[in-house]
Image 1 (cartoon, rainbow, N blue to C red):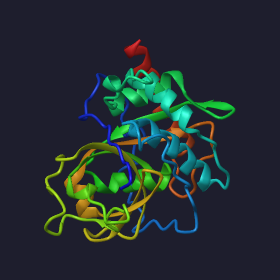
Image 2: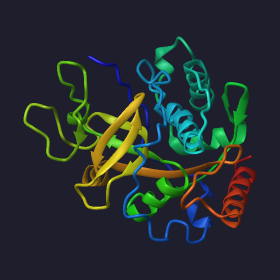
Image 3: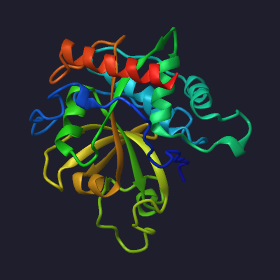
Length: 266
């Protein structure tokens, strides 16, 4: 059995939170029909998500690593650093299981934007915006232009089913074999993970998700049944992803939206 913890609390909104619509046209442009990145290793790490419900923090660290991988280098993130940010962003007290209650994604992102995400030798400050989880074209544009989409999903018990070797199903889909647990979305709980690439845009085409230190395949129809929230991140200190990366004007618009939000949240 492989330990895999969840930890994404129900999606919430905050007054004035930044939206990717600030980058006019970014999500609306036609996304690539496929996004193949088999030649690039985003090198996702577990970052403590096998013992803590710190998926919101682990996904942030892995997003920075995915962004760096697209530019041909890597960012060092340790489990201790991911756990420290989990504590900072959620109130988790190390050694006190009663405080290991997961995180609200918009609050976690706000903490990262305001206080930074400390990795080895530097502290990274993302800017971010939320998007409509029903807009799959927008989700694909986030993946293509912002390295990966930061997601909140509602996992079912059947999604967590493991074989005798402790491996998950090769592909998450809505067709669940009998005996694999409750297939109802949310029956296992909420989880934060990244959407990295995709083979096409049909319901049965495959998406690669980065979670629990590895890559997990799932169909678009699976994602549509599990989606809860979607956010896009840009790490201004890291080199931009290629392809449909935001223009300087779009970045400046998102930065302005983030600054306005922080002023209002102060």
